Amino acid sequence: MKASQILIPRSFAHLVFLFALACALPAAAQAPVYAIGNRVWFDTDNSGTINGAETGINGVTVNLYAAGDLSTALATATTTNSGYYLFNNLDAGDYVVAIAASNFSGVLQDYWSSGTSRANDGSLGETTAPAANGDIDSDDNGTLRTSGLLTGAVVSSVITLGPGATSEPTGETDLDGGDQGQPDGQANMTVDFGFYTVSLGDLVWNDQDNDGLFNGAEAGIDGVTVELRSGDGAISLDTTTTSGGGLYTFSGLPAGNYIVRLPAVNFNPGGVLRDYRSSTGPLPALAYEPAPDPNTNRTDSDDNGSEANGLLGLGGYIQSLAITLTAAGQQSADDTQGATVENRLDFGVNNLPQLDLTASVTNGQSSYTPGATLNYVVVITNNGPVDATGMSVTATRPAQIVSWTWTCAGGTPAGYNCTDNAGNPATFTDSLDLPQLASVTYHVTAQVAASVSGDLTTTVVAIPPIGMTDLTPPDNIATDTDTLVVIMPAAIPALNVWGLSILGMLLAVTALRSRRWGV
Image (cartoon, rainbow, N blue to C red):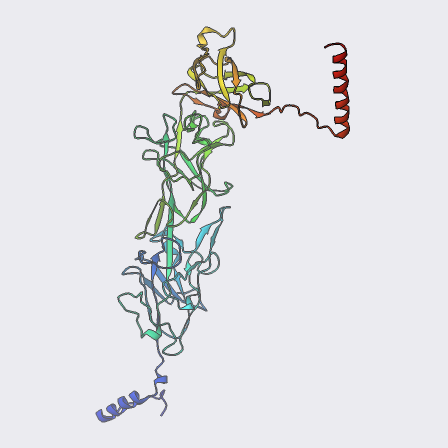
């Protein structure tokens, strides 16, 4: 009798006989069925493997396709119970599992497939996921399709089920309540998909004291346009506007290098930051202009922006150095959301009255000698556009100089408040009231010590009045450096035998003449 023949029972006894016959048919006549699973999870650290702290994602639509036909889904499942899905009762064959593209405007909006990153030029790339048929559990098996069928979906490679009742991996432990649909050897519960996201922010504020640090009395500035650019600065990736007290956020980012810019439109006429400058920090250090590298300086609420591309208001802008965003390697990370947050990229600006001071110092020479007297000329200039009432000049006496006196040049207007100092101060300081476009000249007489070493460097700093900021702070600092020259005494030439003989003869003649003349 063939298994395909249809037998119609003629009596109850005949029915019992047919049942017994069916049970006695060879096992090969009953083809096994299979199952595919298993999990979609928040791969917070973008490592491509599930760790103990990371969690599954519910509500994700998962489609099953025959490997030879990606146009029509064979079945659809939705993840539940912490991200699990299951396709059961499948015939032997080749299959593909896909995270539907529709998820990325829904439950997976702003998330990236594990292995995705942004290159320095702004382009996106993804490390191809391990083969889904490799039977390794709890690793990512999905890669984003960018063309052809299933474009926009994250898709596994081909999974082969069967043949036989022991063809599938065994011993998987990450299961939905222990359920894998079919016996262990007939269920592949290793097809997993990881996703993560990164965000970057967060503050633009009015740094009223220009110290580069946000304090409780200062306020954020709303309405500022903020631009996200590629790590090389060439490509604009996104823009946003500060709100809620100067806050901005770029969300849904993959790992990679980024620059944040306050573009020129903010500083042009009518811009929300017209007449503002980037925070510098106090002179002479100017710790925030240029601003510190955000990859090494992890201080929150300090200035991370530097002026670039010329003067603000004339095409210039403020931007950060490139920051490298690493999944789970930034300010904070949340394994329950697969999210990494970096909210320490801040920008301090101020609209303090502005002026341009310059300083210069020279003694007219490039070297010095021990014990010498040096004459320096120091010139402080206010290039405007406002008066520098209450500005100051400061200089620290170098170690090689034992004393110095400072004298204001003759004819200096009394209203400038230039003050002589013959008291040999360790640090010379003078407060000036210097009108715009005016200068003050000091003559400094300095006595070098008898025993010295090293280069002699004299530094003078012009400091704006409190409440004002300098347009070009680097030229507020001037230095003069002289190289030490040591003059050695002339050596007595050495005499050979002939020289000694001649010297002896001269001495003998001199002695003879002395006796003869009684000298």
